[in-house]
Length: 237
Image 1 (cartoon, rainbow, N blue to C red):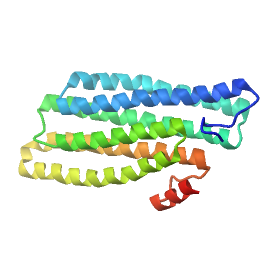
Image 2 (cartoon, rainbow, N blue to C red; image 1 turned 180 degrees about the horizontal axis):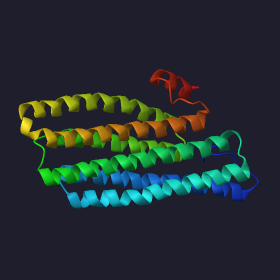
Image 3 (cartoon, rainbow, N blue to C red; image 1 turned 180 degrees about the vertical axis):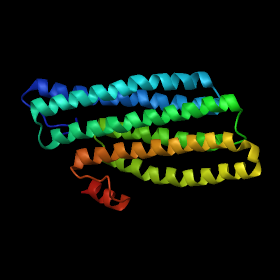
């Protein structure tokens, strides 16, 4: 398989179909990146208007996932792809599912923004959201870049970054729990921050999933249920 993502065929139409569905998935990725960025901005700035836009803009992302699934199903039925082409179609389908779920998490963050706009700002936790938001946005961008370039080494880097995000998530949760204990009146508002942090942690998980799909696509090895050491071994082979 070449770095364009699939074998080259005599049928130019087949090549075009594969490239088009990959392009559609990456375009979906760009839309989801914006949803995440806007959701983070909305909760940090307390902007319920942006939050409403995030929830509304998640609907086209859902339609994009359905369209990609339908096109992948048509390719499987008509072309019966083998080897690297089959991996490409499967990886695109799986990645689009993860992107749709990232969009859902952005929508959940937007919901927390709206709830906070009604209840009043939380006494803290925004620094933690900003930090985690920066990290997971970088992971998502790199995961999509790795998919576009079929870069398994960059994909491995994304998986490694997920461990760092998980560690920071634990630290951030301790900070917000302390806020709740210090001021019981703020519990409901701090819970909104906690749910937003949880959604960001899930964005990181899905970005890692996309990175794992890249390694599967390039190396032909399913690394979804292995540790980082084994993943690194597969990348280096």
